Image (cartoon, rainbow, N blue to C red; front, side, top):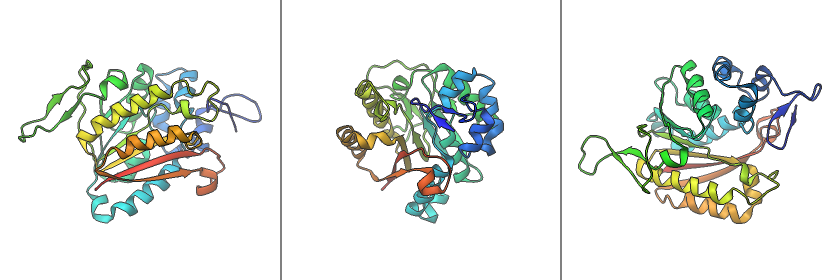
Length: 276
């Protein structure tokens, strides 16, 4: 397969976009084929290619989760049952986390900014038997409004911040949260760099402000490997992550070809924070 600058994959023999079946086989997602087909049914082929264009390889995600389990230890790992995702699109990472959590796992909330991404997300997870509470607002707005516990132990209540309107979606807490906001600005293939970088940084800052309130046990942040080639921006991103002082962070730069023995060269950067 060939990869375009935008991350879309093409058949090297025909120069046509990969079919969904070819994509699933190449990226290690064949076991979720029925869910991918359900997501494709509510989008156009070009929209589906856009949603899958920056997807990571499942083998790399599983390696990250294996290391996370080692850091947690058996007891803390077994105590994890719920997860949520923010800006993850058609959620291959979430599907891997869902399997990693094991029997009784539950997907409690998701936030997606684009209407088509939301529609595909709902269809994908409905096929997986999950119905997370889904944000109906743009990600940067909805992520600043979540359900948080009251200081006096009262029932859950809504707290708003930054004078930003909420569309009424209710987000709950989760043991594991997956963050995958926009990463294209830091890609080494971004010819208009640094366009979009400040907006992406503000989005991440907005997300982390609410994460600080929800305090999930595990926080998984995924980005383009190009971030590590932009030294100034890498320091800025890592400073934002380290601002969550309750978390112990570890970062990994993985390629399915180098680290997992898969015939795919797609480096991604992962940051995993574990609540102290």
